[in-house]
Length: 273
Image: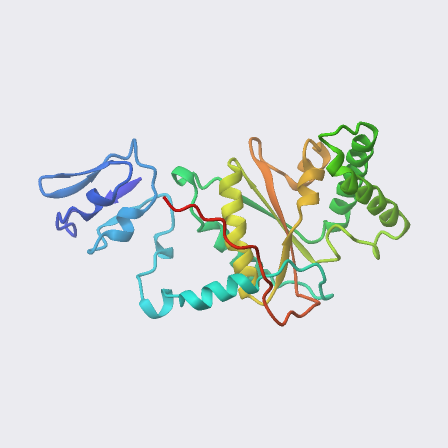
């Protein structure tokens, strides 16, 4: 429940103007919040000059006052940071500290969600990676065989992946711990689930940037997302909640490779109107 401390409220109306859901009005010169329609986005908490607004359902101790030195990011540095990002598929044999995993998840937790749904969840896999890998590779093999047995003009471009999945399965069966072309022997996974794929993808993007900022490497394993689709064993092993779908699987570890420069990209496709 959103609360307004009427002793602190000066009736400036900033929260009223900034409320997207139009659930705040001034009553007798004080802010009054209609909690029935409020989406609890927290804009009123952030904009109030007198710290008069609070919420019961979240931890108000997490609220930080804006400080330019601590909150500002140089735009050119940020752009270079994004440009230098690489998907890492070679990892050191070194565990990822739990505090770093928590910080990566914090970056996802604070990412915006549509209508402030906050529907994104995170499953950290460390001890169970080998079991999860076996289920995923088995699933990919079956999907690959099905594709090859039912090729159509529309699915021909998936033939390469189908053959790759079957080969991955053969190599994994021959040497389960040495041949890992799925998670590349990384020490940790963060599986991102959500009701909305957009919300999950946005969270994953910020989490990836935090991963790099912490000196770690990651890639988003699309093969695992395909393997998990309609796979009851994988969903049960991960404890995916009813109604949620796996959006990304972040493979996380210390990079076993070093990059020296950014790479080129196609020109931006911009349509000015």
